[in-house]
Image (cartoon, rainbow, N blue to C red; front, side, top):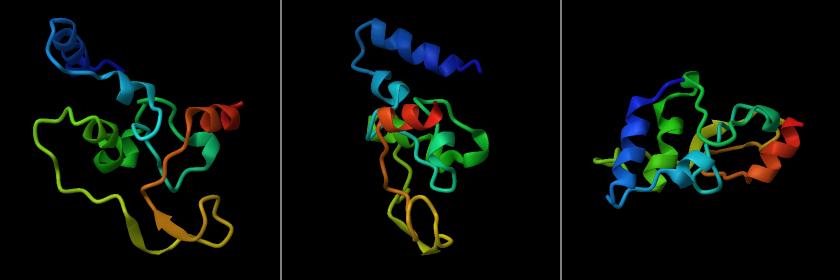
Length: 109
């Protein structure tokens, strides 16, 4: 995928503007993308979004890094309802979970 806005962000950073896109792109917690309905082996490593997961999940790393001009009103707490029994993340629908890059890489092997 080609992201011209990302190239512009990196260019601004190299010109001395106080912008850093590195932490969200690497994907270490709290800049990771956690998709609670995907198993560990399918969790994205770094910022490689699946557009089908939705904007709310894919912009989270950039909200954590505070690089967006406006901050949308999004809460990442627990959703109503429960996950099915035996779900890898437990029965609570907790969207505020962070996985390490090591955990994701190990599961992807």
